[in-house]
Image 1: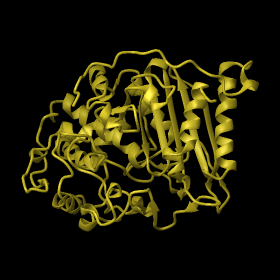
Image 2 (image 1 turned 90 degrees about the vertical axis):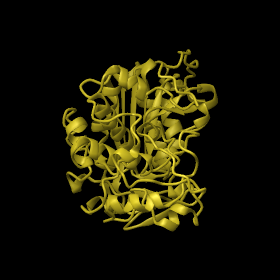
Image 3 (image 1 turned 180 degrees about the vertical axis):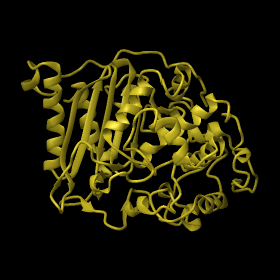
Length: 406
């Protein structure tokens, strides 16, 4: 397993191929608007997404922003730029940054065993042995854990009723960690990469090392210093919260109180009302609510070196592949850093993005990426899963930003 903390060597971005002949003579920002508007309009017209907020920044300047479609289709409520979304796994980067801030403060160590902070969290391998799991392994998703939606329907996490942070309102962290530790590890920690509940466990480590509940620690270390006034583990303004939908024919299906959405392996059960139940554990892997504008602030801080949240060296570690391209964390050509997917091989990824681009996605229908070499930061929040997370919309939007469509 690769563990280099140096940035991957630079490689030239692929040659841009104009995607729209009619935009070729327009000013750059105007041409970008034509291309991105076209992608959004088509996805809405084809009823693949219900609504979206997209923001594109170049070298710190917002060069495109748009709210399109509906926040609530049945109520015919237009989506606004200040709409609130259930962020799902976009929460992970913030939990990871909070952990790294505690490392900088000397309150937490990357090589600390998790049992230093959660003495009762002792999951075992199938043979009954109890390996050491470290904070670094939680950050890199190499801890031997998994997710219920990555197992068959009769898998250990389903049998133990482990919550992935999107369901089971009212479940406590203590009980969920007990259930998680009762299931066997999927592999020996440190031996490979596997997307998992690791960031939820990390969230509890952050809470204990930070001396306060996770929402308080993240507010103190990240959202308050950055002025992310709409982002929290609770809903700041219910009137601005978007209604979630799931892929369906002839149009996306309203999720309602609860909906099981198949994903090809088993599936994800979404319970949108979880966010309103104060008893629900604060899921470091998927529990926050926020806006596109707030998330852009967070990503821009990382792109520009981390101040006032992290030191530049720490951001470099966060955004450098730690596990090797064999992780394929976000598909072929993608490795993984200390909490984000990192592009190692644009050719394998079939992407116009530069080496060193980092990104992630959220199950409620979101995606983002930062391309440091190009000075690009892109946030795309939708209210439609899974299209807005990994459907054709995300690739088309990326290619429109780079003018790399064919």
